[in-house]
Structures are given as structure tokens and as C-alpha cells.
Length: 463
RNA sequence: GGUCCCAUCGUCUAGUGGUUAGGACACUGGGUUCUCAUCCCAGCAACAGGGGUUCGACUCCCCUUGGGAUCACCA
Image 1 (spheres, rainbow, N blue to C red):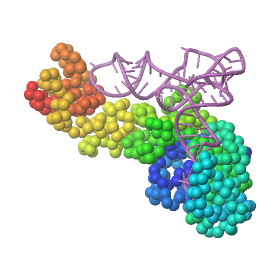
Image 2: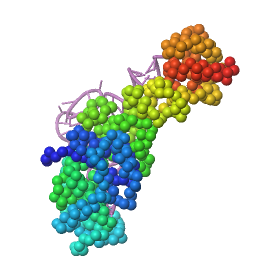
Image 3: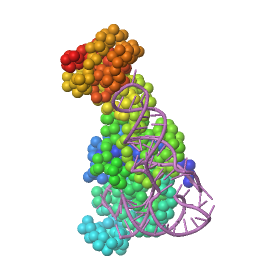
């Protein structure tokens, strides 16, 4: 092997959005390129016109950009390279390694059915016609394979083997003149100088066919790396859109941090052998290796993602988090100033798992609770201290320390417990089932609001 | 059915012949002046089965079982 500059690619077909499985493939390819100082290329495999979704390409690009997996250049589109595939196809025709396929869909179905009935694999090469017409536009072109045993090295799976049954004649160019994946990706990888083909497991059974084609084309084979599936949360099936796998951009909408997703995805099927659980992107670039990628599928676990995301949120400087939190505030928060919102954010930072939780955690800072909300948090019979609390807090400067001292004093003088007194105050001032720590909450909420809410609660209870 | 891949706690995993099989998520219990969360402590919990090889197997080999993929003019 030569010392060609490392180049990897991510080659999705534009049929919809990207889910975590696809993104993980992109991430690994990106990491391999990055750590070698190489290039990461985006190639749009749009050779199936019937499944093509117009907005898909932009959506894919947006997804990669959000996660910081920036391709080296703009995307390469296979649909714009038809002439190239045609030329290479012609080479195969000229060397006798490809032939026009005149069989009808009915022929094929019949052959397939009979193979199935005989419990044998369907191999087109067993029905290869002895004579075929010259290849002309509008005719599908089929590869003429030379079946044999193969052994090859996979960067992830190790030494792999397959028998001649795995090699067959397959379609290179379809009747609409578009190439198949099986053909186009081989040509493109070669022409684009791709050094590592990193792709998911579904292509593994086809590798012997590809190997046969590399030989027929007399081109050097890139390194092959097969990634195991990301499995759905339940069952052993690979994660799929059909089973509700989320669009990666939905995680953006819910306020997950890109660096958290990256760390989570990287450790889904890879580890560096240490007990480290969280990785910064720079560390991943340094430490990642295909050889340490797991060979078995990894199940996607929401809970772990939440934990990782919460971890990143807690570690983040408040000012930075504040910028990201912008779209996630409760509606009424617009009317509050930045200082206030930052204080509030500081209070809930440690309990956010993702930013969309901000709303439910902070609404009572921006809007008075309703009667029902207050009463829902207060048991009348036990709520008897409110007027005393009001008296004391009226004297307070509402600093954290002063509030703390006063409420602690009340604990003494009223001869009660935090579980009683603090719950009462919390319920009356927030009307919420959960809230941040009491003294800070009161301090941030401010004297006017706190006193007004306490008085209102007191009135509601008739005390 | 043929071909191919895979197999350690519920989940993600460490482990490369000798370990009380480690960590993390989740879960359970406890602590941190109320709730929720953080943090800390503790607990629960795994080598699919059977044969070999070996003084010794989670580690190596074989078989079985289980799971998955693939056999398209889809990628």
C-alpha cells in the first residue's frame, strides 16, 4: 500500500432524513479522516430516481453541519456523473466482463421463484445466455463475474471469508441509464481517492461481488471497514425509520447538545479500553480507531443519551448555555431581562437533561401560578405558617444569606421542620411540583413577587 | 433454504489463559435542612449450552443453540 492521503466518505442516498445509525457511520468516517489529517467527503448517492426526495440532501447537510461533521467540499452527486459510469461500463464491455441483459422482469421472477422452490440461492450467472446483443442505451448492463473463494481483511471485523456462491452477475447500469449502487460506488471511491470505505453491515454479503469487480476493473481496492448496526431500543433489529428512529435534527429541536450526541454515538460500539465514559471531540480524533470498534450490534439507549447530555449541560459555562437555551424558554420569559433569565438558568442547569425541559422547570419564574396550581401544592390543614413567613420576609433584603437565616430562625421559633415549613413556602410561591432549591429560588424570584404570592396563597387558604 | 456476520450484567462495555469477571447507564436503598436534580455511599445484576486443547479457560478450536444480514434494474 502506498501512503496516499487518507480520504473517507459518507455516502447517503437522499431518501429522507438521517437517524443516529447513519450519523454514527458518518462520525466514524469523519474521525478516521480527521485523525490522519485527511479529508472527509460527502457523496450523494442519488441513482434511484423513484426514491429521491428533493429536500433530503439539504436535510442531510444540515444534520452533518449541526454536529460539526463538515465535509471537505460540497457534495458530489452521482446523478451528475452518468457519463463517467458509462465510460467505465464500456471498459468492462470491451474486456468482455459485462454484457447486455435482455431478460424481462418476468424471466427474472420465474428464475428466482424456481431457485427458491429448489431451496437454492438465486444466481443469475447460472442462467447467463451464451450470446448477448451489443450493449446499447436503454439496455441494462450486467457484470460478468468470475466466482471464486475470497478472504480479505476488514478493518473492524478482521479476517473474513466467503465462497463462490457469494459472487454473481449483477446489474451495473439500469435501463434508465443510471448505475446501481454496486457499480457506482466502486468507480467513485476509486476516482475520488477514497482510502477507507466505512459503511454499515448490510453490505457485508455483497463484498465478494465488489472484490470481483475491483479485479475486473483492475483497480486497487481501498481498505474496507464494516460497522455493526445500531439496534433499536427493543428487539434486535437494526434501528430504522420504519420503527420510529428519530431524525437527528429532532435532537436539535429538543435541545440536545451536538457534542453530547457525538460523545454518545462514538461510544456506541467503540471504546478506547479505558473506563472513560465521556469524550470531547478532540479526544475522539486522537483516540478513535477502527480496530477497537465492536463487532456486534449496539442497542440505542435513550437513557444513556440523556445522562450524557445532562453531563455536558452541567459542564458548560453559564453564558454559553444561555445562548443555546434561547429557543427553549417559557413564552412569558421574553418579558424578563437577561440578568434574570441567567439567574434562573443557573438554578436549573444541574437538573436539565436536555434544553426542552427548561420550560417545565422554570415557568413559575415568569408567570404567576394559578389558584389551582397553588392549591394543588398546599394541604390546607398543614399550611398555617404563611402569615408569619410574610412578616419575616418583609424585613428581608432578599439576599440568599438573609433569606436562609430568616427561614432557619422561623424553623426554631415555629418549632417545625423543613419538610413542613419549606414545602409550604415552596408550594405557595411556585405552585409547581418541582423547583430548584428554596432559598435561591426565592432570592431570584425577588421580594415583590414572593410576598405577593405568599399573600395570595394565604388568602386562598383563608388563613 | 444458500451464503455471511455476531454472542460478558436489562443496556453500553473492560477483559486477549491464572481477576473476588471491572466501569458506566438504568433500577433499588441511604446521606446531602422541602420537592426534583446534582453530588457521595451502598446494593442488584453477566461470561448461551456442550465438547475439546491446556496444569488451568470468559479468553484458543469445534459443534449446537440463539440473534441478525443478504440473496433487487434499492442503496
